[in-house]
Image (cartoon, rainbow, N blue to C red; front, side, top):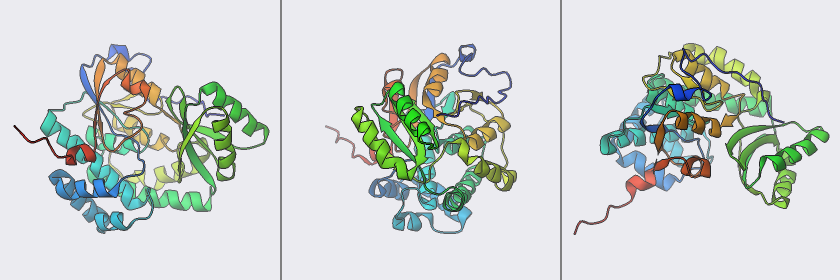
Length: 332
């Protein structure tokens, strides 16, 4: 059911999750979360009143040639081009805020799924303007690819579903001749599955019958081997114009927990996000073996900062726009 091919990038001698104990790291790691639906009333206000966010937003608008905030305000889609750019800006601005207000100085960073772009920028591997341009172009490439070449595929998330139950459901799909792949492994009983939208109602029914809890559906989908043509096209037509540098802060790859310390390592991580599933447990294992005990999650998130795999292993500081905008208690 899942694409299990192994493809670990060269980390220039820095061990991956299987040997990260050899990379002593003390203190904090920063995580840029995957993208989900945003509350515009909160994120929009943050973009306007936070000075770092406002500056980055203006730079993003100059980069893409339109008013990102205006289009974000009027957008009807949670994953529109402008919503994706706005999410990137919000996350990076929150990370910078944590540096100035809390003295954040992380030794490792990670960015599951969409968060990989934020991690690439924060680590110094990719410039902010290149990341904005890439986000804009990717949104258009993905929309065209999934409409014209791979229509009718979605990625559905669900909790309270042990792997054995998911495997049994997958076996039924396979017996029926249905394509499907695990796109994200979030926790022991929390996954995302890509499949044909026509089978989504059936999947939800099967999950509920086994005590599972269907959550939300991502469209466009992501992280499946079926999307290899999109990966190849993006590499040839978009990544050729990008300039990557060796990161100042090592990046933990969301596919396998390997530690990326080179420009090519981060570049490949971003490209592999199209075709390889996210494995949050592998990221957690690397952080733990590296001595990380405090985790700063910079951005709107109701997933990676909250699952037991995270909360039982780290002291988590989830910094979202809501927490920044919340009025401070009056001094006595």
